[in-house]
Image (cartoon, rainbow, N blue to C red; front, side, top):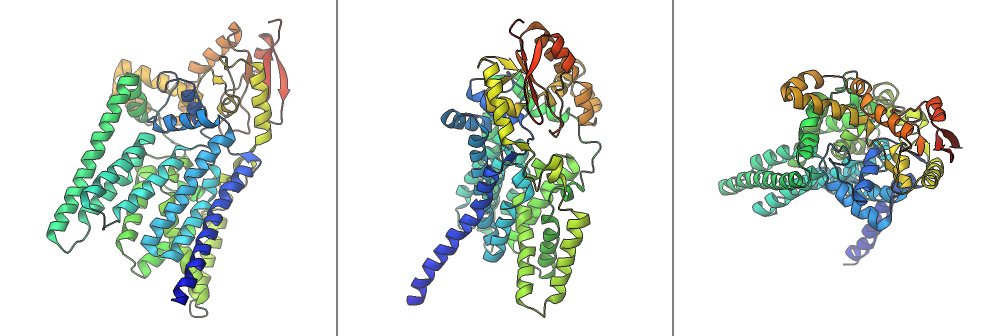
Length: 514
């Protein structure tokens, strides 16, 4: 009795300290003086919805809109700023850390679960996507779906309904969240069971879950079609096949450029699984999900966008957690396990230097371990100046992340995609889907952006020359993809002058006489 009673406070203290350990990286990231700027139009799109603008009709939006609806409500309550949206995103990451622990504990036990959740929480790619990224909100739903899938105690039909609801919400945020859903349904249907009646029930449950999901997504799509019409269909479903692809990169080896320490630990985790024949249901499910995500993003739909791998990251971290725990156990069993420990340490060292280097894509533009490269103070200074130089109803030319912080509407919303979208829509409507797919589907996405920029550069020039725009901030080389570069002489000839200059940006405003 005494021993049991005294162990409970110890467990509680361990649990509390573990939560603190997972909170520390989230707080540190928000306090870090620089931000990582990528996919910043989605920041602005959430704010645009909060002020009454419509996705698909008022700005290009190649995703389902549920996240924008939720974020818009949040921004109405707490205001639109980097800090407010970052709190929301970091809360989703923290939830994923806790859920990763919960899933890993079912799969591999408590020690490996602690390693997995810490590896996820302290991953450089998670630090990189700290502000507002769709996959940060999809990831906890996918992990929760895996936990529900492994819950044999849950009644079959309840499991079917809950799993369908989880994936409906996930796909209403981003459609590719569906990738692990068939894996989980097959897993439920084929899960071994002693009783034939129970096996039949599980198969029926898997079928029911798939049907419920499809009906819910179809109903939601019908609602969105009623609200937004043809543009919703084209931008959400058709445009994906016409926007080109990463033709230059090697998508099959791309994960090694973003996952650093997770790569050798994942390899060690696989060694542990296959070497010790750890083939329980949970391990099989996690490995199957990782394989499905990699097959899609590495082979079927090649991507060079690191944020897509946030969906698979918790599952990768669980396998890596097994590898990390194996190394920890080896240190406790010296000298018997010295060979495994030495081999593992050598693999990690070689990998971090050569195979999956620690200094990788998450260190671009002077960033350190995904911690960003644009000073928060500079963003605040520019946002204040942009707000002072324009009215709330004005449209401006400026990077999306500055427009978001200033609460100003960008003239050309999402220029990275706007021209490609206009070209794809024109070809689709003139020549049909298959002809447009043949010409655009295999084209290099970055080249398409260059080839179609006239759609938005012409509009910008006209807006500047006509006096429609009174404030301009061109993109800077500090950004990952600087696109909007208005020549200084063109601005000067149209009555603009530089009024605020920072380390990386210049605000041009129209002279009062103009």
